[in-house]
Image 1: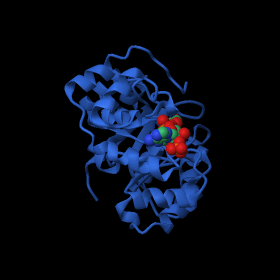
Image 2 (image 1 turned 45 degrees about the horizontal axis):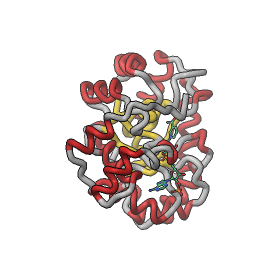
Image 3 (image 1 turned 60 degrees about the vertical axis):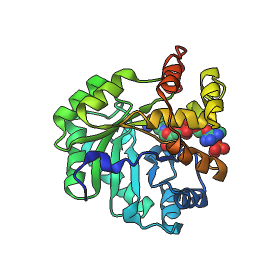
Image 4 (image 1 turned 120 degrees about the vertical axis):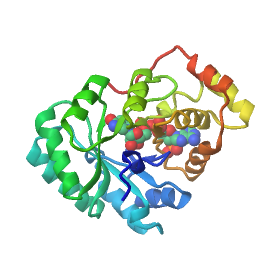
Length: 259
Ligand SMILES: NC(=O)c1ccc[n+]([C@@H]2O[C@H](COP(=O)([O-])OP(=O)(O)OC[C@H]3O[C@@H](n4cnc5c(N)ncnc54)[C@H](OP(=O)(O)O)[C@@H]3O)[C@@H](O)[C@H]2O)c1
């Protein structure tokens, strides 16, 4: 097992929110995805687990991430609900366990030591947080014994997260970009369309290539379509130049999908 906290977030993952067909998960793995993102609240951990079982790739070669929902962040509930997540996923450990949102039953001094304990017990390889601002990240890093492996936040060309990107770079954790296509909202942006045309690519690929090119950002697009799965993974081979990046970063409209 690598000690590098970034090892649990291979460069592009599969978002699985709303995917309820295990064959789609297996198809993504066969296409080359090695990092799968689910959550207790998506109600599809068993589907993801069945997909992993059906695929021809060894479990040890996959990185599985799930998230403890906001109503289960009291220490005893972190332990119990994670056990249930592992059962549903059909695995002995997950590679990355996130605090899904810092709301409701989240109490940093109580919640985070419970995540440390799961890591000490080997049920969780690394600890992450999601929807945390820079101050909440700093507090979590202070309390956790484990190195913080990731903060998963909404990030795409219409919500560029400059502050958190700088913080992730400074402190050595991955910024996992959720809704990296803004659920389709980025497809009609003229800035992305012109970069796409220049590279004979699609706006979806431009959005993903821009994110994946910003180390340590890891986009996790969701797709249930074979064509889109391939197209999105191929975005890792698309090299944007400085003009392309400047064009995307000149976008001054903002759209946030999740509060
Ligand atoms: N931590 C959190 O609070 C949080 C919140 C939201 C999401 N997430 C995670 O982030 C993942 C991704 O975000 P998301 O599901 O909100 O949205 P997204 O990945 O930005 O967009 C998904 C949508 O784009 C379509 N799509 C994918 N690739 C495409 C392509 N190449 N061309 C055209 N359309 C394409 C998909 O349809 P097809 O199936 O037809 O391809 C789907 O409708 C989620 O699944 C979840 O794992 C986390």
